[in-house]
Length: 359
Ligand SMILES: *Cc1c(COP(=O)(O)O)cnc(C)c1O
Image (cartoon, rainbow, N blue to C red; front, side, top):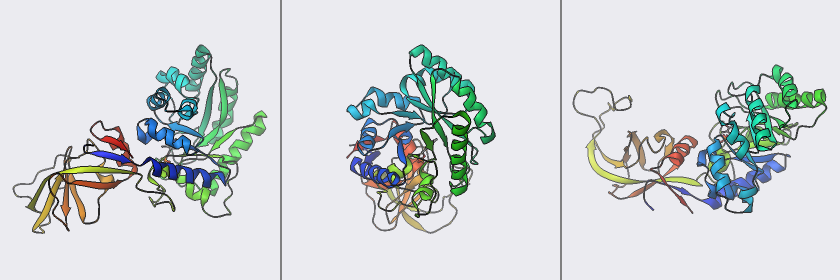
């Protein structure tokens, strides 16, 4: 297959997902596998389901629709699908059509979902997301009971549970304090309205440290996590550390060398700004072995690439990645394999210029 390409090792993804499902199950926590970085790949979706995840979760209804439309087997056909970004009012009909459950914070949206669900003869399930400090989505805790009251009055909406999301916008770490607060909120909703919430969704990959480290952690009412990066890249997200026993190279990126020359390190001429406003190189280190790979910012977040030993990334533009090789001369046509972070994965997966090879 041509370059650039993502090499996707489904066995390694299976291993990561299964391992996390098992570890979380020991704490009474189910795993919703977040597929938003995979552009609705049915191959990956099927692998995740085979590995035992509870449901598939995606931020885009378009991805959920495509996973629904191309089922590989019974598992993908019948999988429960969760929309994890608050639905747009303008997409309420698709959300009800393709997602079993959606995460919500706005009563206007939930009312529209109810109307659409009635029109389609369905019941739509929701999780109410609560703000616990990270300042992205979420109902302020003091407003939760009032919103629950309104939700319970909507005929075609089923309140499946509550959830929260930390460590995304502000890097707020999930800990015993904010997780206890989520449990307390679940208890108060149940006590006030005499009902049972099925799902208390504590967060994302950043919650694993809290959930799995140490025997003493009080999990409280949390019984679900939505995991993306930890499964796909085997990485913990608070400090970007590899998770023990998981593969960090389940998905790698391969790019091809299109130029390889001995070049000076210091540019010549009057220096203005670069194509992307970065600083131009200024240090004079003499001549180096500089190579260009046919991949750029259209294809990948170049800051999220980790090259093999002996190769250093010097810079990038829309279509070019400049590297320095300290060991061997790279030759034209040579393929170089990179480890990638989540940001690089997201962009490469969604770029039409990067092919996807499943191993
Ligand atoms: C992206 C996202 C997740 C998954 O995050 P990871 O860090 O990839 O585990 C979970 N929940 C919500 C609401 C998200 O937006």
